[in-house]
Length: 266
Image (cartoon, rainbow, N blue to C red; front, side, top):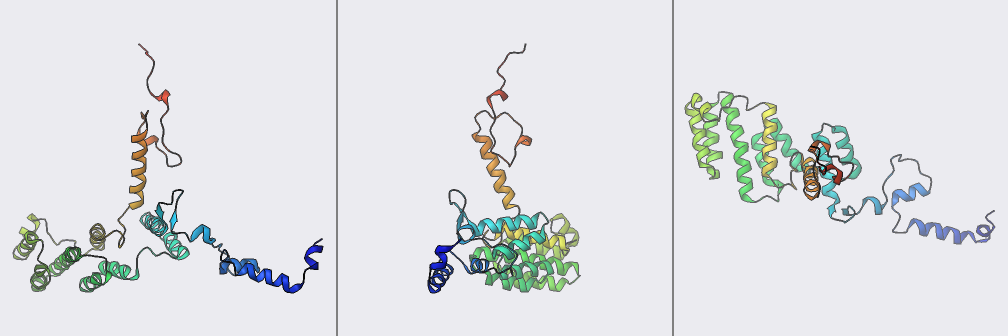
């Protein structure tokens, strides 16, 4: 067995082996596999499987966006470890380090620092920066009122909120909140509970809708895309005559002819 291989000079066999490892179709991890390395137990995708910029049968889906949306869905469903593992294995972070810092500063209530970070994120026009800053300073304003620091809240209103030059009506409402706490309830700007972690999470959600989606992916984006696909399938179904509860993600929706009443019963 193998007589042909044994007749070849050793130098020739080494040359072929090293040439295979240098081939552009083989990456470093694949080379380790060929040499019998067992240091990495996690199988790594071949370039043709995982390094393509576009995925899907029609090549319409950008791989980075696709992975980020899946990661976002995992976190939204409460699968934090799975989301973190996908970020690590794919090498595609859900957010940039600057955006992660920005989100954490919001949750911690570091309002001034979060506004400073906001200006460093980039890809945001001036109008969006002002609108986002207004929301952040508004929460800072309410926090100061909750702590009874009326002069601090007034300073925030005059020095940080009003110079933004937007939302004048809301600025007037905030000024009335300082003058009368009872009036603030009528105006819908009561500060009660505004410093809770839950309310800060709501602030993050508001900013997600305001900032460009490539900076902060909107909540439940994957669910929205799936629902869109199901609605399109129902609209294109010629004999559609079924309830939405009968829809499945495992196959494309299509009603059969026998689901349409075609016989007279009475």
